[in-house]
Amino acid sequence: MKSTTASLKPAEVEKKWIHIDAEGVVVGRLATFIANRLRGKHRGDYTPHVDCGDYVVVTNVDKVVFTGKKNTDKVYYRHTGHPGGVKETTPAKVLGGRFPERVLEKAVERMLPKESPLARKQMTHLRLFAGSQHDHEAQQPETIDFKSASPKNTRSV
Figure 1 (tube, rainbow, N blue to C red):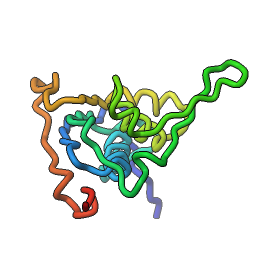
Figure 2 (tube, rainbow, N blue to C red):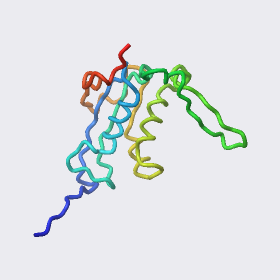
Figure 3 (cartoon, rainbow, N blue to C red):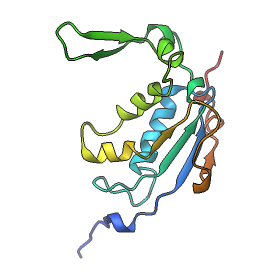
């Protein structure tokens, strides 16, 4: 007997659009969920080398929360490319700044495979909006209530 593993082909993939409201949701848990949806790991016919994930639209990204004291104690580092050019910031500064969606964007990006063309393509399927309105009503995204899926998805005060 010979058994073969069914492998998806790029032409066979049917992508869905999903919408998530991120108000009051813990960043790490949401980023994990989004990364799995972007990769397509929720599918029964998941194929690692094929882009078989969904499009994800996230609103209210500026209202995400961190557990514990990560909002002020966690530090994000980046380098300008010049000698001595290490810069640091905290999630509180980023969320209160001009581009609050970068917190969730970087969290999801760091959960995808590193520096690959497939990961870059999958990141283009993530749409983040700081407010409650988004531009993708025409795609009729399916709304997923991530907040009530588990009590750990929201921060208990």
